[in-house]
View 1: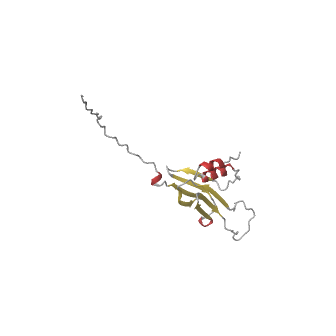
View 2 (view 1 turned 180 degrees about the vertical axis):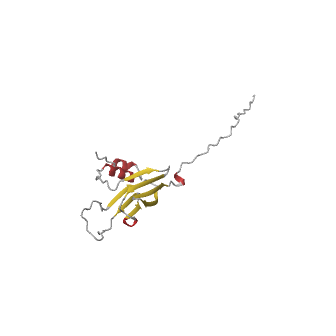
View 3 (view 1 turned 120 degrees about the vertical axis):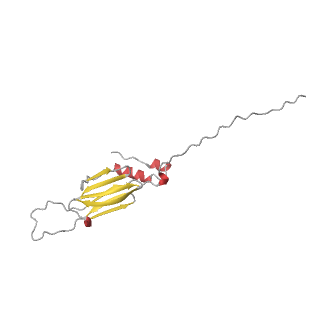
Length: 156
């Protein structure tokens, strides 16, 4: 993919630098990170849910942090030992992970829950009243009668 130079746009726009940075980062080749798998779904007009498969992790081993339009989910497995025996084969991954999601303006995390190995993160797009579209009433002006111009004729 080609790199796009946004510098000409910086000269004529104000406040769009975050958008250009996001577009620039999307153009970069991303490492093939597939763990943990996740879904992003729209659950309502302004609500979303991220569901991550984090089997084997409990609440104390997961951390969720939202900062500056980035949602970070981290998982670090505590070291566990085999009780009363030794492992002959270890096929269950204990790898740590960090997954980042870019959040749009006015999107905030409302809740998170862990059930049956699935981490659910609920998001809400909370648009301020001042930014919501509003209906403007159109007032009809009263129709005035045409004005007549009076002239006085002087005979002289």
